[in-house]
Image (cartoon, rainbow, N blue to C red):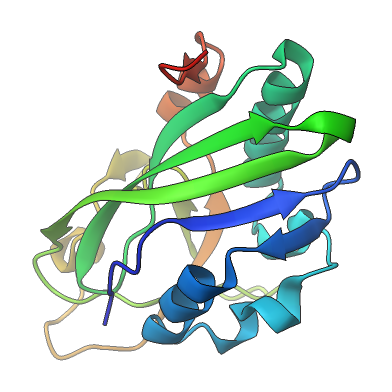
Length: 188
């Protein structure tokens, strides 16, 4: 179940630790998406990096944080954060505040049907087979080609519902787009 509970907002301190969250919308979204581990009382005070899977994804987020702080302007990027049955198009805006603090707002722009159900799990380090998944556009790397996530993309049988082991990365298209001019908000 994916419910749009409004924007999810959190604040980072100068060391990129989560200072606080807009707990009403944050906790409603976490609960609606089976994210008990992401409830506000379990994340406040912890470094943001603990909640980002994959070195490439961490570097992508760090670059946006650096843009916002260095340029002292809000920076916005669109991304996908799919549920098992929906494509969820999102926007993240990072706004610099005083004392190197940041306000980060993630807003749902629209949803589309995924055309089936896909469940993913982060691959372990035990040598299991995995698929690469872009943390930004959610595409999957199948036979060296980045494709939209769809049950047929992984050649799964419709009855197969086991979570698909993935490692999170950033595809070349999303990585290249990061090096283009950041998107600023209208208020900048």
